Image 1 (cartoon, helix red, strand yellow):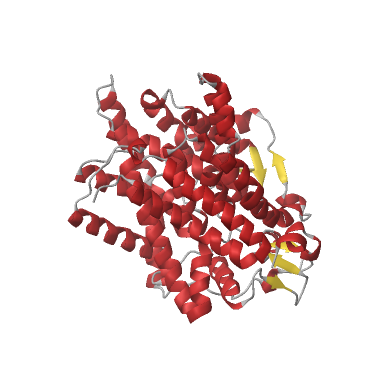
Image 2 (tube, helix red, strand yellow):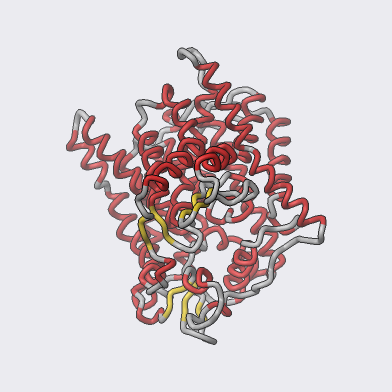
Length: 494
């Protein structure tokens, strides 16, 4: 199988956009959805026509036996990480399955009235195709399609990665899959170094994050993300790959990035910020700034912002504007010498070493600088009980770090010191794999004691009461309360 050409890009973009189309058609009034879908269709067609396949990253060829083997491996890994509930799922699947139940069993947009008046407002993109299947054939079918849809997305992530990082041999292609599943920073080294400095402030090595006092620092490994929050991961990774490959095509930035709002708004913040920086950089170095300005304000960018952009922003706005307890609010950590040192240790081992080892191959790439500067300063901010701000916003940035690593490993090796740098990268990948391995171990353990699908909540109805004793992150992070007053419900909802 050749990994170049428009066919793979078309399938990838369809995977991204099918849930978006379902959302618009199923959640908004016919006159709103008609306009949005027409504009999206025209922009989509024009983009596919304009983006010449010859401008894609060089092709790689995956032999049929190798492709079949790798697809089987991806399926096995996904099942081991909880897809489908055949093996023990992580606790967060209680939330995923409850969301799927409500999207299957209730009308759209999903409304709750038994306690407080509330509208389900969340990153529902990955659930929508399974929910349609569930409406036809029940929750069992929806759960099966949820797993198959996720596995299909993971396969697309892998095949696109092979092309973009130019993994042109069987060995490189196998390594590409291993890195995709196991990629992580060297957290255990960060913990060890910090323990030498702050022995009285740190949690044990058994934890998957670095915690000290008020600080909870976590840049998740790919295995952790796939096992715990994959509905916010796989499609975001595909959007990252499309953006990475076409980051010079400014006129299509919005159509490439706007779907991310439906899969993880925190990820959108980083992607949108990077797009703005890249557009400004292109404007500065352009020989024809007038033409660059025209591309920035292209009909596609404007049309998609004013149609699909407004729909998705208004949908999320009701949740974002809901007053929340102070503990869930946005804040800056205390700026002290000890906190700065701790963050520095965290940054160095979680991504900084990778940045240094991939600098030679990417020093002219503006996105490279956006990524590591963003990751360096993000830990100074906090939002949510589990610091969802840091965890969510880092998803696309950490994925780009992995892409930089893969590109460096697959480079021709002619640069001075290339072999030594690649050897060090492999060493840190192996060290970083410690905690991803623990995810698989935990999954096997849960399965051994009878664990399978986690479906204890059944519905989110029970959490729509702000006076209850339920965990506040469940009460405040999934709903627009008093939705009748929200812009989405009043003007856009069906």
